[in-house]
Length: 149
Ligand SMILES: [Zn+2]
Image 1 (cartoon, rainbow, N blue to C red):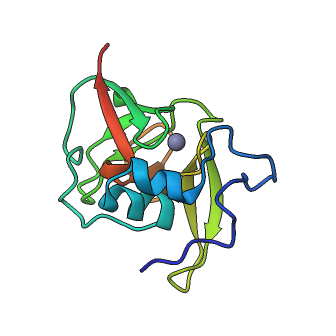
Image 2 (cartoon, rainbow, N blue to C red):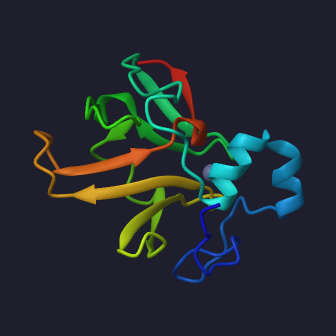
């Protein structure tokens, strides 16, 4: 099981509380076990298995835990990495970043800025032809797609 960074799950890296924080027992009751494992225990869904890996339908991607709007379909691109990939969040303050040293190297973990739910990681400089050269590699199960313009 992936280790959760040394945070209490209720505060952002800057120490301010997540506005949509809940007790772990509440999250456990509200989320199905797979979603709980990814969102609250920083798990990772298996590649090429998530429901939004290849989704191109226009709309917004919300946090599956708290409903905050996180990503837009127009920033989603085909990375072929096995997970939904975005080159930018919907707004700069939609997500927060944490150092994740769990695999013996530093990766940048991406969490929902509203509830602290684990979303995935962001990678830089991989050469994808996007405006930012960033790849937000996000678990489908952390998201809920809301079709729309
Ligand atoms: Zn959230």
